[in-house]
Image (cartoon, rainbow, N blue to C red; front, side, top):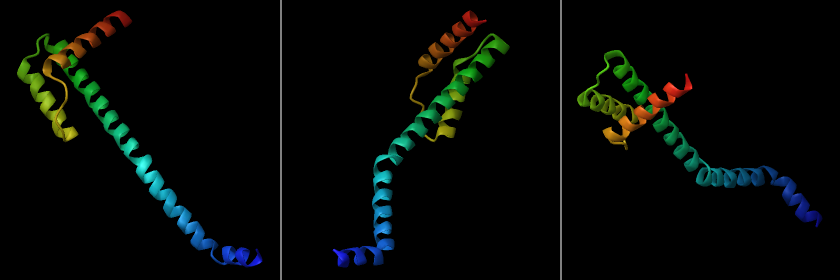
Length: 107
């Protein structure tokens, strides 16, 4: 028993290194992908809110907003996100309309 204790004491730094490596692999496999996925979702939600706000400002300032203007805003967000925008222009307009209705009833 004393010999085992001496081996543990002499190799405590190696044991701690091994525990650190195992924990790094564990956190890397289980927690980092979920965190990256959450960050991507948050990035999309921020872009979606920004796009809706831009369209609302266009509509409010001009009282008209053309389809090509909305498409160019979506293309700009696709460049920023570096991936295709998952919503269609019709879906975006429904969200903007709902946002206008929320503003109407909140104030």
